[in-house]
Length: 215
Image (cartoon, rainbow, N blue to C red; front, side, top):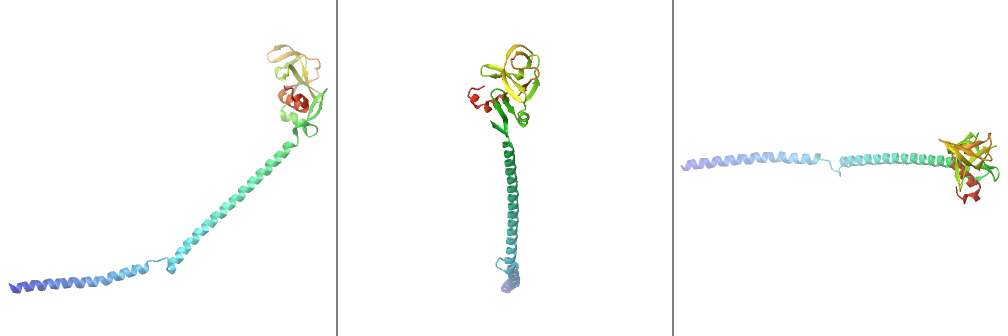
């Protein structure tokens, strides 16, 4: 019985010793793997890690510079376009001022004004204002030719390039046509049938004294 006890104890000691030896054999291998992993991992402080970091930063700087250059080019193009618009607008403004609506004389819409004859308009002003005329005959005029001013009714007569507002009396109406009486209208005269309001404004501007009386 005692011998059996010693045999069991001896077997346990041998087993424990074997486990201890196996553990010691594996420990150096684990230590070597840990050191190898530490050596292979690059750091920013190492030459290779620092180089990679610098390359990445340099690439970002180049992208920023390229983006900045593109942005500057876009600003330059935009500035050129704005400059072109300003120059075009200035030219158009100068052209529009070549013939002013206000005033009387050369370079104005009203080239001449006379109390007896009326006003003369430049051909460009007539075209721009859209003034239309038609022959007058037999005391008939369209309703579109009527001009109401102050307490009167009249029409604009065109004779020898002069526009003059003449008072009339209406005798009758049939549809859009009026039968009138006018002392100073002759068969060869023309009457304004469109844009009579603009004609009135041009006349009032030419004779500034009449502007205070209204239409």
